[in-house]
Amino acid sequence: MADPFSTMMLVISVWALPLLIAITFHEAAHAYAARMCGDDTAWMLGRVTLNPIKHIDPFGTVLLPLLLLAMQSPFLFGYAKPVPVNFRGLRHPRRDMILVAAAGPAINIVLALAAALGLRLVGDVSGAAGEWLLRNLANALLINVILAIFNLIPIPPLDGGRIAVGALPRVLSRPLARLEPYGMLILIGIVFLLPLAGLGGATQWIAQSSRYVVEAILRLTGNA
Image 1 (tube, rainbow, N blue to C red):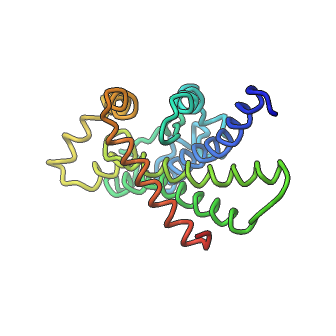
Image 2 (cartoon, rainbow, N blue to C red; image 1 turned 30 degrees about the vertical axis):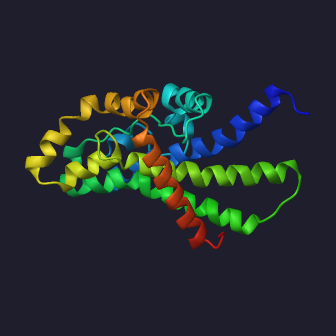
Image 3 (spheres, rainbow, N blue to C red; image 1 turned 45 degrees about the vertical axis):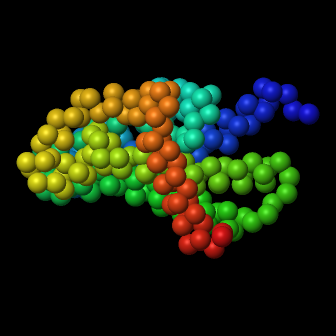
């Protein structure tokens, strides 16, 4: 029988790698899209890279996922250091804001599809290494879907908020943009405080939406 420490390390290992890859690709996609749209801020800071060290945030990438695991949250997510974007440096600021913001969730859906295809191609494998690989692929599928859905919540500074600010008429986008300094506090309330108060509607919505998208991807890739 495995000791509790080994079991804990196994659980962390099959979640840590797919989460790190998901977050790294997410931020690198923002940085790449910003450069393609005319803003070199992220490029100058070395953020157009798949080197996770450039993107890791001690709390969002390490401590927050561990806290959610410990709390037995219905979903697991994390975040990296936000990619700095000078929206005034974009060639078409409102349109390009949408493209830059959408790049992160879009790459997560691509990674989710890749993980599902990996599950399809690998199939049933034997041994501890094979089981570890399958669990990583399954978790990569789930994490990337959750990360995409969570980031599309229309609250700045999340990607959904930036997309909404770029897409809405100015009379609506300006008040929404002014929420950005308080966005993280609102999100902390949604993720941590509401469930503690027995009001887990938002987290349950994210979890349920993620299940629907995962099921759709599994059907699309021939896994179901």
